[in-house]
Image 1 (cartoon, rainbow, N blue to C red):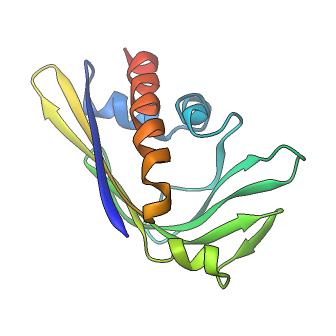
Image 2 (image 1 turned 60 degrees about the vertical axis):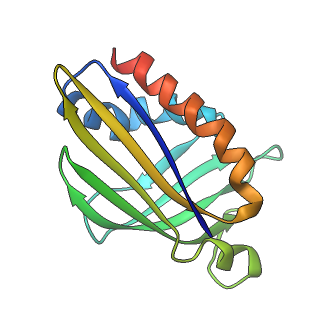
Length: 148
């Protein structure tokens, strides 16, 4: 697994950036960079299970099943991926699921004058590096547009 880092500076308070990034309606907007129709089920509370979902071309749900490892409001959130969701079913045992087990996705919110730097660090299997190198900058640009 390799850790990738992405960041952007958004001209807004860390509270506004945090809320926009994690609230359901606006989460659905900026995560369209990954898959149109993306959404989450669950909460961002520390220790809770959260599912990141989207319908595939034949209408069944796919995504990730994860746990919130840490949540320091307006500062830091850490997500640990546990497995995948394929055809609407959680899978933590297959080879594909094991590629993601233990991978972290961290968001850090750093005040910078009038704005906020959003730093995203994610662990990915090497087969997904190019995909995320393409998608994350687009997602952060969309988040910036929504917030500003």
